[in-house]
Image 1 (tube, helix red, strand yellow):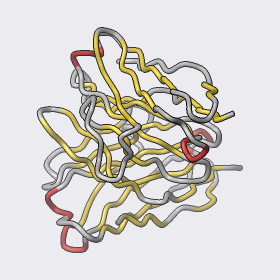
Image 2 (cartoon, chains in turn cyan, green):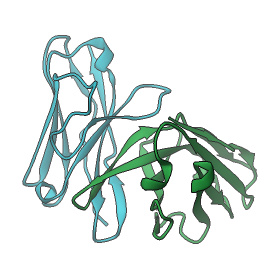
Image 3 (cartoon, helix red, strand yellow):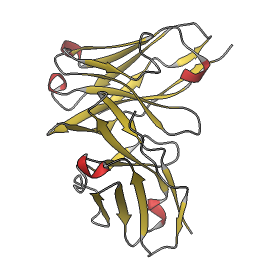
Length: 108
Length: 119
């Protein structure tokens, strides 16, 4: 099965840039989607199709995907960005949806 | 908007039927999914059903025990869960799938319903 690997927790000071990665074999050939989940809440979509932002998501959220790594970047981080972030792909070989294990972002 | 219901406490080997009511979009034109989250853990995709009900897919962990269905006339999605195990415990979310060129993503998600499987 296709495995997505996300790093341990990430900590960043307010106003700085947070980078969260999602590793997978040749993930650059797949479309990657990203979700934000705040404590006790349902996930919400922040990036779809590698780089696209849904309406209402701040421009501070951006992403890229190449080779074996997809990356979510959050610039000018503030306390409201503190959450778990998950990457997701469609595994066409198995007709299964795959999620990464999630990365907890802490704003110092 | 998506609103789940039907969660609760059940013993191992028991059954539950989850429901998800949709509003605000043309339900029958979208594939729908169930995603679950065990306490303190990450997201796990459970099942998918196409808008026309032609296609269904299941995670290996639930295949043969869970059945996804939908009633487009009532804008409702269901998950029949049989032979429940302790490891099925978690919050179950329904989510609408948006698609493009062979990929799909989830937006929006419901608020979730808690399923607890315990002796």
